[in-house]
Length: 197
Image 1: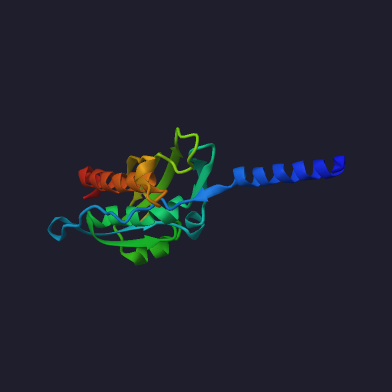
Image 2 (image 1 turned 90 degrees about the horizontal axis):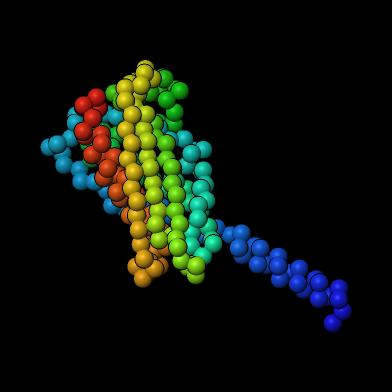
């Protein structure tokens, strides 16, 4: 085998390794578990939350285990958790594309508008497996009236953990546990805030 051939084979092997190492494993960070909705306890208001298509399309990449990374869509995946948290407190919940469109806000009939910002992080001490064994999620909402004036802010955070033996094909388990905690805490924070009654 010639030197050129060996160099080409070595370069090809390095390229394959670089591609494999550079990949991020896709997971879903949302959860199907939602805070309880008790009709008798609901605040008789219609509220809205904002989420744009650009936010839904925003991909995040954070650390997994074994030096790998994971990828997901935090706004798209966690939208249900945010909506469920609001639905556990209020009678009616709608979604708006933006607070900038005051005509749409007014037309929605919402008395409060929640604009969420989502932050996430993840990781794993495992040198051999890629799924994250811990995942943190923080949802901060600026709450405005229909005219756009800020009323208050609420924040909820959750940390989910999962061991390798628990994954059973659900590689985003720690993220789902974090989402469940965030939805529950967001519901509680809204309920406790007198300005949001």
